Length: 385
Image (cartoon, rainbow, N blue to C red; front, side, top):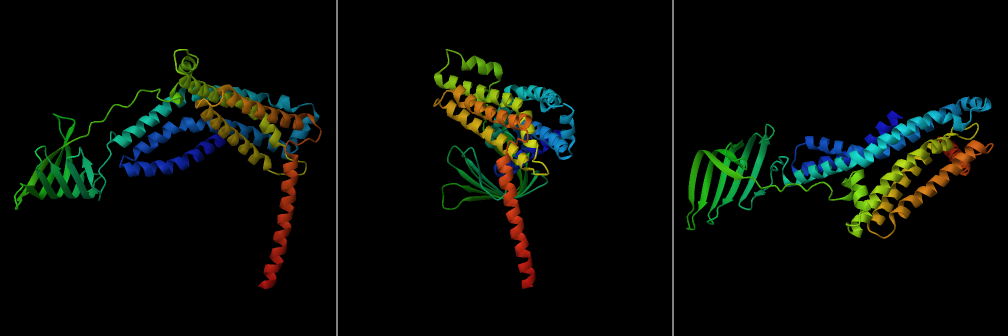
């Protein structure tokens, strides 16, 4: 179960990791921020990976018992499925507590932290570097271009700067190399120390003034970065007490109440849904007799992921006020629960019953036809040779 949880979380993060590396590279930010953003996303993906880990862990355990005929022996001595599910349900209750902490407390904080990192990266508060080979505008008065950057940005080569002051005078500065230096007196200003270069000053006359220098310090005013917003701009950043206070408060607007109630009900159905995972696992773990089909594993994953997506859609629609949040989120849950209970009843109480017997038969026939087709193609290929 733990291995499946780690695998599911890793797969969910991999796709996001590639996009974050590209985004951070485009913004010129430090690579280390990628791992901070991934860590902030981990609680969000864990809320789906925990039910998946529980489902597949129980499913594989019962599947192993079924394919080795140990399950038949246990049932023959009076150990029914309900009795065998006691330990899985103890694990379920423990994981429900973990998921409650995730969706009601850890996720809102991590979402806010992720939004803060994204804002700071876009605004340059994380030390976004000047892109090599491109013009960078600083405070609308300076355009800076650097040909090469070495020693992790400490040494810059091939520098060109165009500076305009408040009087309208323009300086074009080129230098062989340079480096950025911090100032102790003014933290909002840094010094670009240039070495071996030329300054061309536009004086308004036909002939500009040209000066050569060995070393020249060029002050650069850093852009002022506005303070990031407070937590709670979106309902998904509220923890449980805040959701309850806003969602059922008469002093809030209807739009605010709808969004908070939709978020609360979405999180609740995601938690309560875990109570059905052991039953679904048993219903899909038992293959037909004399069969080792793994179709139930794929059906289980598809059902859980599809239900999660339906809940997300229901939350979005309820947030817009188009449907009551309770109906939008608990309606699909009731349908999902009735389907799982019926599947479990078929396996546990109907002799020879199968939850997905029709699918198993269809895939078995499809497998036989494909096998015959490949057998026919092999002799034809051998004859051609």
